[in-house]
Length: 119
Image 1 (tube, rainbow, N blue to C red):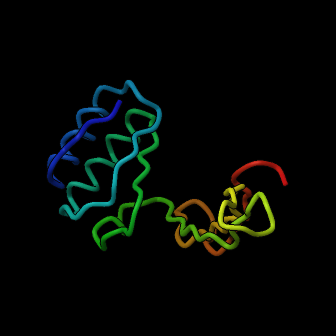
Image 2: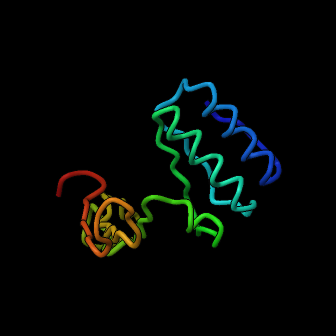
């Protein structure tokens, strides 16, 4: 389900409705600027609905206090299907994930994942 919302508060309201319905296990939304109380409410609703609220983007300060886990993702390497040429085809990425905040374990862990076809 994709719910378009033109403003930050409209996005938060849409997520609020989806979480209160408890019909989805994962709800994804962009990181938008709203008051800290709104983030706390959304986190509480996600916990009550046993759902994962995944916020994507550069987190505003208000979100940082409420988030239980914060992960920074960075592309380490781009993989191409052929060695050279202008018609080269993207084959995948090597991505590094760094845990910068975790309320249930120590931060500072990292992982590397491969996205794309097996090379």
